[in-house]
Length: 611
Image 1 (cartoon, rainbow, N blue to C red):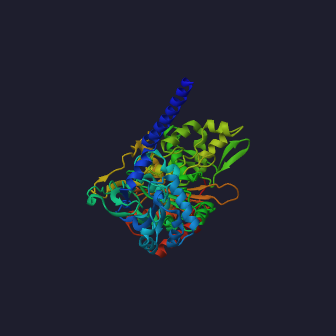
Image 2: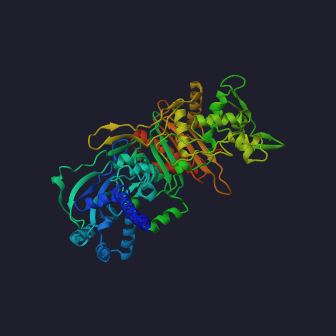
Image 3: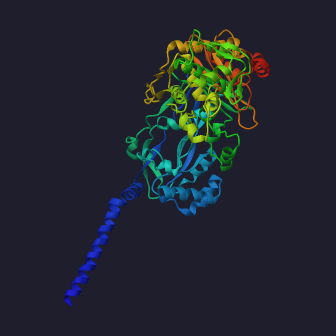
């Protein structure tokens, strides 16, 4: 009996000790963080001091994006009394249910840390809350900023926008590393430069230590502020973009759909990047209503879609300079001699009595003449002679069919077919499929950014640069300047320089004698190529144009893509011409002459071309 009582007694004591040890483990190890924060909260508080987000400047130092101070009401749920919900809702002029929902979201994140409850509140609302702060334990504020836009250039898809951080973003390892860096309710870059350079633009928040009472109310600095840490590591971003060229491009695309990319051929800097239709980035600098967001994502014109880097369509005749370089390099045709021409009777046979038509009967054409007059027959023949797998290899040399190494994150690689693609896509395919590639039609898709990069490589004689938006970063505290540390090296395309020069000459002839002559910049020689790409169904063709200028020392290469706008010389060419003129001359003709040039190009039937 004694033995049984002893076993029961020791078991009870052992169980009690086990429970005590488990509770100690729970408090000391598992719940250490919450216990520490709760204890600290009764003595002092680490309050974030958010730095002003870095500004964004164009290549000439013109400020494009800056900050305007705004007030954010925060709450530490641990100290908030739910019976004060109605009071807080009244002060903020909102519904009790909204405050309750925001409080619950803050509790789910962390009850012991301040969370943003309401952002961008008016000064009147902020003042009312401050006057009643003694009645609202756990409520505080942060002075933050909202983005403001200073230039006529929206550059919405290039610059991007800020949005409230999601739970997945908040729990990402790089965000959890610093407990004061990000919190529920914070704004982070969602797209464009704002997203890609988020760590640089945001910087590291500072810390202000404050003595608080048992109700969570601050009443004095800790150690007279000597231990406070100022914000640091904020950088202004300086772009390669020219804000004036960007603004003009956007204005020329009013009521149009498409994209523009303009590149500096000397280094790959993006002078302009336009996607239309777009959106007003200022709507993201204030509280975004659900209805506004739904309007954006449901809009059939897809204003959030970056056409400049993602819109795939056949390149049309803008592809012919590429085909000329491939043909010369693969010895499909000679640059001089007896095998340097192709005869154009106005068509090209494709077998079984079928033909592909050319829009002219050109007779014997050499390569430069074929480029000048955009002879389809010549380039049908080049495609018929080539190996389609080599075709894909050459396309990759110029950056087609792959993502560009750039600081633009929203991209599509495009489509460049090879034999494996045709085998997987068609039960039967023939030389006709391949011949279509010679004039930039058929199963292929490229973006304006890819076309501009390829044009820049032709302009500079064969150097393929990595396109980039951000030129350098400037530390706002020290004024030290730093280039982005991950910009890829440029590559040289393995095609002989004399072949590039021959194709460049053909593109100059296009601007002086061919379909691009109405887009020639007064007093500035250039090279270019128009293109008309077939649209599916019964829709009008797409208008495309590529150009570089000046001819001898190119400083800008442009690709313009107008959806369902007809011939390349009609919509795309005059837009590119005016952008290049503004960039090179720093001025434009008066509005009457500019409008006249646009109208002449749009109505000129002699400027239309095939492919």
